Image (cartoon, rainbow, N blue to C red; front, side, top):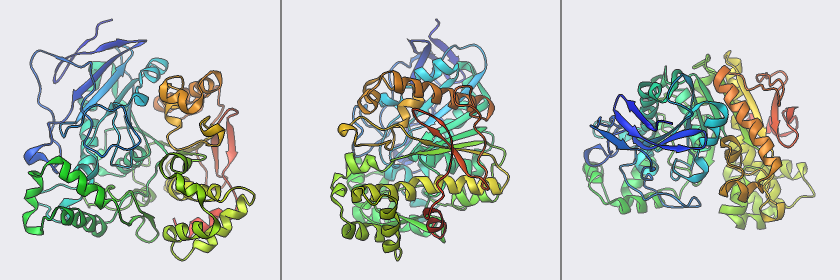
Amino acid sequence: MDDVVSTPSGRLRGREMPGVMAFRGVPYGAPPVGARRFRAPEPAAPWQGEREAREVGATAPQVIGLMRDLPPQSEDCLTLNVWTPALQGRRPVMVFVHGGAFTTGSSAHPMYDAGALAARGDVVVVSFNYRLGVLGFADLAALDGSAFDSNPGLRDQLLALRWVQQHIEAFGGDPEQVTLFGQSAGAMSAVTLLASVQSEGLFSRVIAQSGAGHHTVARDESGRIAERFCAQLGVGAGALERLRALPLDQLLEAQAKTLRGWVRVGTAERPLRSAAMTLVPAIDGELIDAPPVDIAGRGAARDIPLLVGTNRDEWDFWLFLSDPSKRKLDEASMLKVVEKRVPGRGREAVALYRALTPDAPVYRSYGTFETDRVFGVPARRLAERRAAAGARSWLYEFDWPSTLFGGDMGALHTLEVPFVLGSVDEDYGRLFTGGGEGPQRLSGRMMDAWVAFARTGDPSTEALGEWPAFAPATPARMRLAARSGMQPCPADAREPFWRELL
């Protein structure tokens, strides 16, 4: 198999893998350093001769959290990876956006290896790095629109998609059949780009895993966060250019302090409140002029099919791995936490969620509340708003419990990723799923559904059966589990409660 490809930018030498060729660390953007820091990205310059593309690129600068095993960090991080079964032909293309709360993560993490998905589905898969944290999502343009650009991280994503349009035929991909799919912040990014006029023609389908259209901030809010960041560095309004010369470690230190605060995200009338994810896409009037869920309600991108869903126990990720102190909640302390999330409605929320599972520990009720608030309800709202505007969406719930913590951990946030990418028997996948025949079977069905959607805009498969588009009159979703199948969306007191809030 020839592992050298000629692209419009130059020749690349990749690496053979089982069933595919992989090209890693390919530059799509010029290094966003010096005068380019905090500005829109520029395309990478072409090169002469043959370039090695066997190793992943640098990780975007970040404060390392739970995700380890990452390459060294550098601001010169705008690189991408391509997996292809062959350089000839025109296959569907699937472009993956990694998650990490807009502040952490890397496409180079081993769990994001997409070779198995590319080989099984006979598709070309692309992943990429983009600027994170203050470098990608501090809205300094709200303070000085002539010296800074809004949403550099989103603009990186757009540039990567433009690279795909210009280069992917060389890798055996079809630029007219591109599916954008992402997880967590990557899903929120994908839905935000779905709502952006600047993404027209860059993709034809979208898959959003555990992220929807509520997580953006209004301009006054993004400006306030930017001011807080500058204040941490002692940089006043008249000296913002100093930010381009400051050492990276100082920026990251100020970023960590900037994250400690509350921010209002979501629709202007019914905001979600977040205490940790303050650096998110800004409603800048250029890329987007309203929350993506509201733009969807206007009928934007109504011709682009959307597959959107969540995991049954998303919040177990934080209850067990990130903030285990919350497993000690009683009803009184749950009330204090919940009241901050839905001011004035805390007692009602606690009563409602305790009534759903009265015999379960309090932290289980809290986890269900947060799963609904941050993931489940936004996904359903997005499908509803699109349906009302004549757009088609497909809804799912992933329900495979983790084997960690003696089986006490459920279908937590991120657990679906190794199922979608075909790595349930690799290190991360086996750690969280136990690996073996059961996870392999579900993984195969999910990969086939994702690929079917990328090929046709419909995730129905022989194994899963007919998967109808979401219909608000009879709301239903595909349950992806040991026994998969369509099921009605929950019809209980949660729906009227959240309808007034989200």
